Image (cartoon, rainbow, N blue to C red; front, side, top):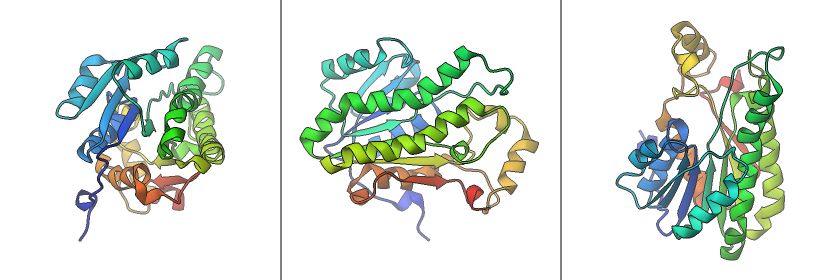
Length: 252
């Protein structure tokens, strides 16, 4: 039986920029793109973690807080200095403060919306000129179950991830005529630093597993096939779409 481990895709000659690459889904996706032959530009706040993810692959790591006022120009400068011209962008950086609608402050609201929704647009916008010139590009945004479902203490995160679905459509409308495909992956529950409050509670983790059609939560390897599909020529006529990778959570 074929598995995600059997999928072979070559990204040789391509360069992939991954935000949120120091841990979780971002780190996993960075590694898979590197295995497929892409040169990597890994962006995150923790230099040591970025260097560990990059080990063994061609590329560079850029320690940067993407919510800073000059973050995007700083990212452009760092990529220019390293000779990085991204063909593939994975917008995996994110934050979820898990506050109720009554308790979330304007500052936490803005922080959540900015990193989860504004930064993916601004990062893509910064590097689209190269993709246009090349006539080829791939933008992969990270959506969520909360793009379509409401969860307790998730009002800001859900608003941002709902926006990601529409942002992905709008990116496709704006840029796909130039050969740039923009799509999103909407993971279900996967064990990462961001979802630690779920997986640290076995009853809650099991509850979510029972709510999938498959009866289990996700494993990072489940993301490999969708990632390589969207990052490669295989998705050459697919754009503006959001693919749930959730074991059938949203199918029930």
